Image 1 (cartoon, rainbow, N blue to C red):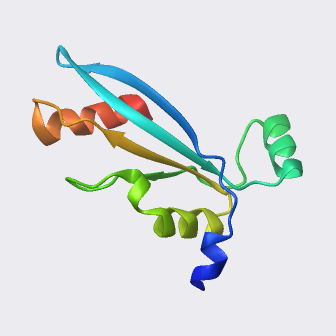
Image 2: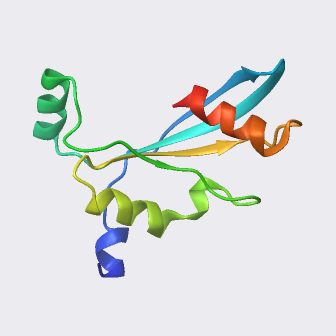
Length: 108
């Protein structure tokens, strides 16, 4: 896919800040939603109570932020059937990677 196609996508950019409890620790997270569905696709999805494909979930690696990968997330959305992606930034937990993995399951 050519770069200009990705950058022309109009993504909603909804943002939600919340927290979950894992092993007694409160772990904060930020969830960003990218939604490039057409209005007719949104109406059909709401009526059918399902997306046209899988919900795409992007979780960046250590020290990276979900919002920094704009070209990657735009490409994922453009090439997916559902046209929906959640990018999740999980605050570093004291419990390490195991707690982060448990938090991710609760968030999704």
